[in-house]
Image 1 (cartoon, each protein chain N blue to C red):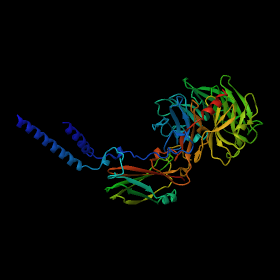
Image 2 (cartoon, rainbow over the protein chains, first blue to last red):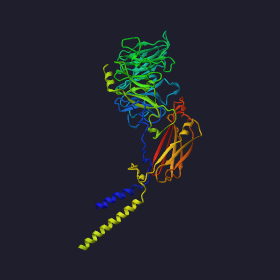
Image 3 (cartoon, chains in turn red, yellow):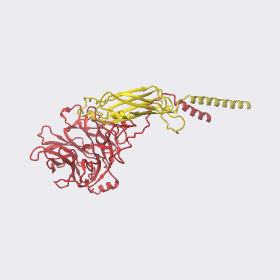
Image 4 (cartoon, helix red, strand yellow):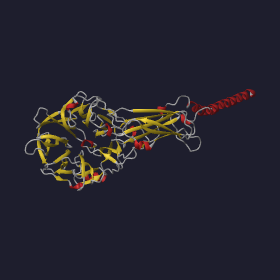
Length: 403
Length: 171
């Protein structure tokens, strides 16, 4: 009987294997995704998205489990390392930026299908909240929104909305908190238009770059802060004539940091500045080196470090650096060899625990390149989201001294 | 009693012998292991090789591609196995990396027979002209010609694992 059962198992197994037609779709190609293993941003850098499509505004959820980003014109969220993308905005919705409000809710800047896109410019949109299980964006929180900022570890989001009927000198800061049921509106008296907005790591203060439109300083840029508990704006710096702020000023534990350059200049003469605490004068940040060309900055969740996208010199590639604000030491956290890293301010952010930084990059192509995988499994062939470890233990300890 | 035992043993032996013969014959009639729905790894280089397809683009033609209609692109399919393939279906999907322009152009060809070691070149007339934007989308001012082009080629044959090659072409 034992012999019979052995013969039966072996023989019938072979017979049954050819009993039915082969389902081609059931056979997955064995070829590895050769693209994802060969990243040119350095060790430890991992892709958080794959496949074609222009990505931007990457943000890690407060728990650190998921990432949301704008894919072409809609918002998706997914697990960090699994391909389980979930669309969060409806077809026809045109999104430009997104931020996590809580573990499940997102704030989205964009225009909905019902809105007149003709009245919205590239710089102005509407602010929507997208709740969990709420496929299309919910109602508009604010219109005429020119800039948004958020706490890196979640908690609250702030937006600056231009008041349509005002004479151009007034606007409203809209603060949305994760635990709150409604947005809070703070009328703000400004002399011009906001070009950049950020929220302090503790969420109590907003910093804005404002191009002055009237008075004797018309045409110049000022940096102002707004403390929500006091309800008043405070000028912290007035930039020299001809100098414009790039992106949003960042409130740190060591003062306010910002990038500025000559108007119309294309990165060549951008400089990293800071306004030390209790000072009204700005100064260059010497720790980055004389030839350093910054492009984008983001303050860490604890306020002690600054992620800086930039180049050591005009001949260097764009890399990601971390500036320890206590030591004024700049550490490279990528070793870029062949990648284009996006330098738009919204395309750089920290994970809520400050352990890594998120950027958007793609490989440089000088000609056609052939891969052994489907396009949906490729990373460096297209703009994709990458998580970059924020530094070695020694570097983190150095930054920790400033707390 | 002894004769009954003899007949019982004899009958059992005859049953096992006949059953074994049928099972051996059944195994002769089966196709190679590669027809398993789940591909098995090769244990050694010896013995018959599973049907295996190799797909490649003409690199010269890829280099010469432009953003226009009526261009020739040659795909080469090779049978690297030891058995003849009765037909190989090939598909080329051409689309922009920019999903705001979701149109996919597909080209299909079938190679009738492919002997072991044989390479068949399939010429396709492809259209790489920029697609017209979808009017309902708000992103109308972006230049569709600035996005990278994706050329995703696949080949399928009964009994062989499908192969995929993706060429990405910068504008």
